[in-house]
Amino acid sequence: MSKETLGIPVIAIGVPTVVDAATMANDTIDLVIDSMIEGASKDSEFYNMLKEMNRDDKYKLIQEVLYPYFGHLMVTPKEVDRLIEDIAVVIADGLNVALHPGIDTKDLGRYIN
Image 1 (cartoon, one colour):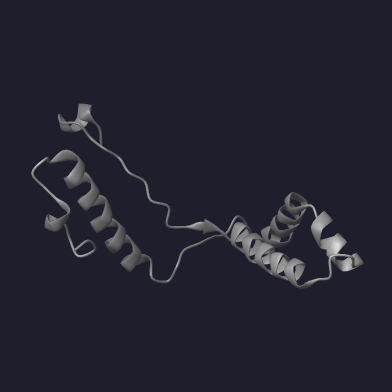
Image 2: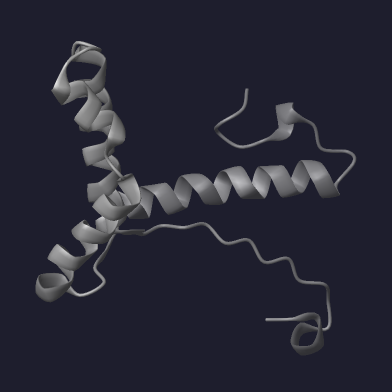
């Protein structure tokens, strides 16, 4: 869709609805590591090992482990349909307020009252 094909200006808005499985696993492990760092004694070898861990190497390792089994697996939340419905209302309301001077937040959908 474009101005050339439709004859009117077109606004495209992308909303990511998937995430790379390796990124999700990496972020989860980072949260665990951060929690262990908080609980470890600052003068312990374990604390130093966690602080010195190269997180980029960890991410690459996760990718290497997952790829043979799943390829570049992308995952989506099970409630993706609801997420899309909700974000569509938010985007539509934002566009309406931005593009129509007569519309105020009191005129918006179910999220802003």
